[in-house]
Length: 267
Ligand SMILES: [Fe+2]
Image (cartoon, rainbow, N blue to C red):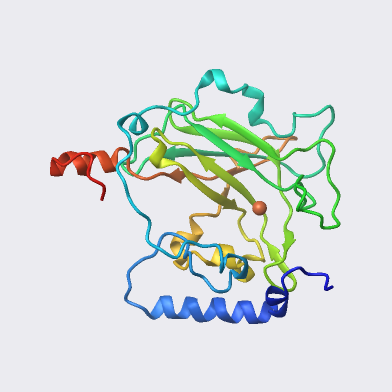
């Protein structure tokens, strides 16, 4: 029995994967296929997604009317302290304390107000509290790595946390993820829900990571990287990062249905 579960994945080296990433990037740069702002689902360097990514076009259906405007979570569902991932235990977690703040807007530029933002992340050593994460880095008894908050009246979210470390994964031999924070956002309607990742500026692992590189457009990829913001940095306390998020246009499906006077027809 080998140390790595997937022999196919283990057979690839970082050099193999990097070469594939570069070939795809060059083809995209040469191509006239237009700008791709979303991750490619079929992205061979991302070995561990080869058999589990969708292979058929999504079936689009108009959501129920209530899903277009009903908030999923509200003030009574959250405790304000859930936005501080450094204050969920009796002691302080180890690592660089940071604040991450940003504004959530919809595709029309309007603030997404009072809606749920959830985050999860590895600790400073790059370890998740998860049964499947068994790599030999320490868990931190003072850090769970999950938080949530509601955006304010201006669409602003804010978390206090610890800068996560990079961690190994078994996509290929010696594969490491750049440091990142996972985000889930519920917009003003269920159809706006988005799950994504935020990265930190200047990470040396960017060029090597097939998840980050599966967004093949360089400008779209750069939008996943937070900006260091000295205005958010607090003296003697923490450094600050800013990361703004754009969700899809509000009520887009409904507007199309209205425009075509055929509400209820799947498209
Ligand atoms: Fe992760």
